[in-house]
Length: 544
Image (cartoon, rainbow, N blue to C red; front, side, top):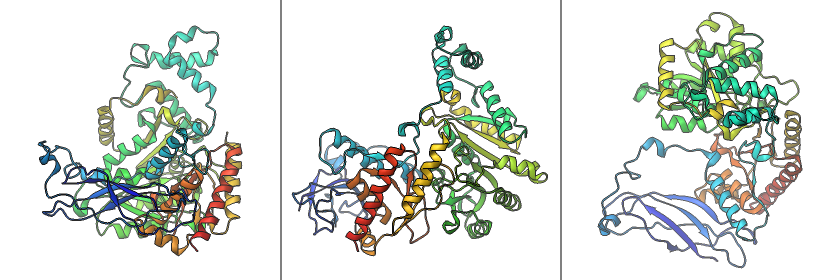
């Protein structure tokens, strides 16, 4: 067996040096490279100085390569505060004194799995031998990182705005030059380096309004109701800040889908709001059921004040596309129950399944007529990070508000002004192949015993359900890990495939999933799916 090292930070007792711990016999097949996990050991802050211990467990591989992590004994710190022993003042900001809401924030998409993937990439660069030659990042929807080419016109306009001297170059087309000149004229000093209006450059807000009007079949969009943002995420958090209020049983509750994009649970934790879960129906291709909304709402009213309903359409991580009938039912429900609607529509251009069609909440709301069209409050979000553009790194997005109280809209403008303005390059800123990838992913997974994948109707992820043997679930619990986290860690260590466990998005008790992007190039996607399927079969045999 190899030696275990516990890197421990002890709250109330300073930082402990590396200490050797003993491990019992592990479970696992020979040749397994897996030997990593995050742990938390809890104990009281008594006179002996024992505190909250957090650390990372690593195993130095012996010749057999057998899996080594099994059990960690409690570590007890010395009786004196390490800082006092060193003659140092206690730090002002510690785990005890920091914002407790921040400590509750979790974001699985960039969580422990991804940190380990980065470590593995570094080890591969250093020549460490692994059972794979590269780490495949299937955990996040980063289109350009997966090979999607940027749209030439967008990059030309951006280049001209960043370096106006190129406006005299014959290498750029006249339509790109005209667009860049109109944007620069609206910038202070005709420079993209100047601050803009807090809600964004006016001509770009007008362009966004024109886009929305075309998308919605001529229904007007007012630029004054459009706020540009640092990606859609920033706008979502801003609207949540406006909604969150109260304490105790009067705290704001926000209904979010389960599974959900973890931005919502993270933001609600940071704002100290109440997360109200409603479950999508996996057996009906992740359909949204108003009866389930009503169940969640009625249950939540016993301990909080629900004020908002979040919808993700197309779904992330689940990939479903809502029908018009469903959207109408949701709008009626929100109106009857006096809920502010938040429509996350960043994947609106990513719709592939035959018979599926994107309907914007605003369009449906307006076509339903009064009283819905004149009274129901709505904020809809979009981003340049997805769809045809895929410009994740430029951080450009917007929110359009509908029927918002004018006084509240002024407060929203004030809140955005605190951040001065969204990034100007982000403001400036091939679906047939994705449809084929979505179909291939569904087809391959559904041929594997123990994996079930619903049709990927939209967005850019699959969220397959996996069956895990009881022994694997028991082993995960011994290690203090969610069973699907255990599966995903083993998958990463043995194949180099990085996916995100379903527990990071929320799922029904007793079910296990993972989220995988369908963005990898087709020549990489098929081998990835086959390798993942083979690993699941091997993992199942190992723990059966």
